[in-house]
Length: 341
Length: 136
Image 1 (cartoon, rainbow over the protein chains, first blue to last red):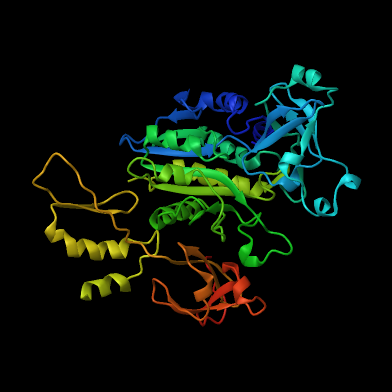
Image 2: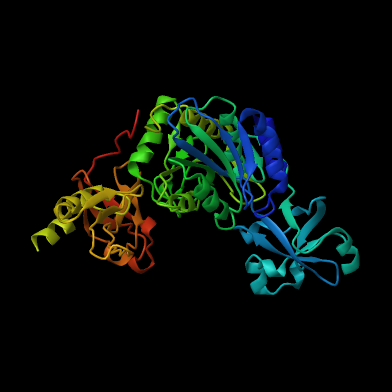
């Protein structure tokens, strides 16, 4: 399972440019499902027939896109101007190594040297417009041979296991969720189940709208990652979630207020399966839920997530125990007789 | 007026509208042709008109703003989040009541000025001695 997660995180899939990650997930899941297709916007949808004959539809949604960069312009001196795809904290950019385009051209993110900056500039993180990517090209002409505007770039960050059962990698948001869906697809399912790997979540939950509309399920379960702010200096009640405390079952976040009866159902399934869970104690962040919940005549939606430190940075950190809890809960959901009746 | 009082007295914080929906349903059902609740929880009452080719929709939200408990500290104080536009400037010293009838008072941490206080600086005191175990 960890090997699969490693492959998933190392594979490129910046919001709007999900071809590679879509191919990898297709490869990982295709032998375990009855049908697999890509919809018009790019969502990968894997369908598995349920054991139950009553035609209830369950949709599991994990976004497969990741935050990253997009090349805007190749400057005369060969440096690249770029913009962020998704919410990237500009403080994490400077000095990073990135991989650009399909061939993974290496670049580093730079700005002017410390001694050239004004007092004011030194005090704050430079604006993204003042940063550039250096690919070592002599000039614009040389740079144009290897990169083009609209190429996307990802952080060049390795996958490591460290400390007390933790994992560090890029794009754990949300390849951890993708992994949970792939693992759940390996077993049998009670309901007709749609495993949906959505696109464009990080840039406005766009894929979730169309997937929910075309599937129109009886219940949607969003599987994602969410902020853990469990460090020194953050008050206990503002820590959002904590690593090691289990998978997160949402009551509310930035895009949706969840129906209490639906949340209770998921909590009961978790308790029955012996899965450790926690609530998030800050009502912020954004998931595919809002898009799904407000599609058509409204779709019953719940959300679970693996807590993650330094979300949207090159070094996302999760706990293996929490990841296992998320995987176990998704497996328990697709095999729960109480889920849809 | 009696009915308005009834509507205003019930807890119907965003996402928890079942009770107010029930009250409205009881009041309106004898005047309409059909009544149902949709997936999101909207209460929809349909009354047939004499002009059958066109549809008219009247919408009034039945939820109200309120707060939701997000954290219980060891001393038994509650931290909370807003559901809807809850303003911090009128929170201090307010009495609140929960769905189960428990009452509490909202206070602010001492070391923060009211003008600078964020929602995270407020807590609810329900007079509890200590935190009870939330689950076993």
